[in-house]
Amino acid sequence: MTPTDRPAPPLLEARGLRFTRNDEPVFGPLDFSVNAGEALLVQGGNGAGKTTLLRVLAGLLRADEGEIDIDGERAQASRRARAIAYLSHLPGLKADLSALENLEFLCGLQGRRRTQVPENALAVVGLAGYEDALARQLSAGQKKRLSLARMWLSPAPLWLMDEPYANLDLQGIELVNRMVQAHLREGGAALVTTHGAYAAPPVRTRLLTLERQRTEGFR
Ligand SMILES: Nc1ncnc2c1ncn2[C@@H]1O[C@H](COP(=O)(O)OP(=O)(O)OP(=O)(O)O)[C@@H](O)[C@H]1O
Image 1 (cartoon, rainbow, N blue to C red):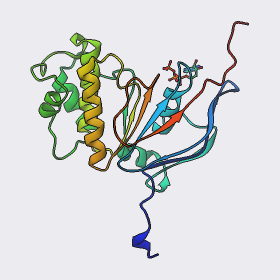
Image 2 (spheres, helix red, strand yellow):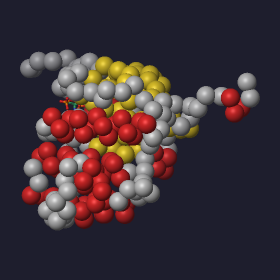
Image 3 (cartoon, protein in one colour):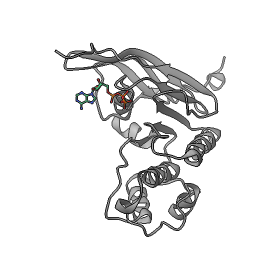
C-alpha cells in the first residue's frame, strides 16, 4: 500500500475518553470515531453525560483520561477552533442584536463558508423576514433556528449538536435533518445528542449510547 492508498483518518476519534465530576464517573472510558460523511447519534437519558461529552470534545471541559484526534492529529485548541462548530442547547446569541447582526458578528469571529451569506442562511432556516428582529424578541424555536443558521454558515467540518431538535416543530426537525444530510454530503460530520431515538438524522448514522453512572437517590 502506498501512502496515497491509505484511508483518510476519521474526522474525529476518541480513545479511552473518561470524565469524572467530584469523584463521580460521568462517562467512559469511551472509544468512538466519526468519518467524514457520517453522523454519530449520542443517545442517553437525562443526566447520562451527553452535554458533558460534547463540551469535552469542544474543549470546554478537560477529560480525566483519554485522547481526542481530529483528522488524525491531536485536538489542540487551534485545531478545534478551525474544525468544530458547536451548537449548545443554550442559544448563545446577543440578545440586543438583530438576527442578521448576530450572524454577522459570529461570522466575524468564526469565519464563514465562502458559498454562503447571512441573509441566505436566515432564509434556509425559515427566518426570512426576521433580519431586523432582535434576538431577545424571538421565540425559543426561532432562537434555535438562528443558532442553526450560524452552524450553516460555519466553515468547520465537524458539527457538535447538543439537542438540535429541542424546541423545534416538525418542520424544524426536518430542517435539522436536511442540514445534517447536506453537511455530510459535502464531506462534513456531525455528532448529534438526543434523549431518545424519536428524532435522528436519516443518514449514515453510528450510535453511541451513554448510561447514567452516578448513584441515584436522596441522602
Ligand atoms: N456544572 C455542573 N456541576 C455539577 N454537576 C453537573 C454539572 N453539569 C452537569 N452535571 C452533572 O453531570 C451529569 C451529566 O450531565 P449532562 O448535562 O452531561 O447530561 P445530559 O445527558 O446532557 O442530560 P440532559 O439530557 O438532561 O441534558 C449529571 O449527573 C449532571 O447532574
